[in-house]
Length: 89
Image (cartoon, rainbow, N blue to C red):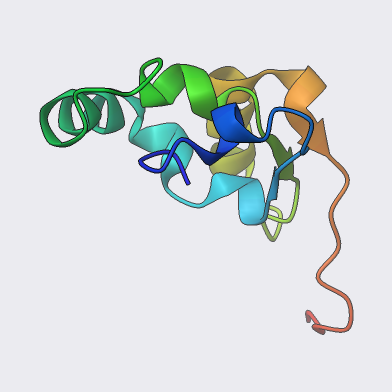
């Protein structure tokens, strides 16, 4: 989506990424470096674009994952998530 500049082409769509964005919050610097190299015509660095998305809070009680996403995206871009009907012990 970032390489194709979907968020810029459709600015009124609110993208919600599941599971706190998976590895995204840990790879912001790498996304920027690869983005500039592989897609030099991006409107902005990928780390800026991903901060415009929303992320659900499904993280199976991982405080480390939640803290990483919270610091990377801010509390205002985290939304309540559910993995229902996945059962946990």
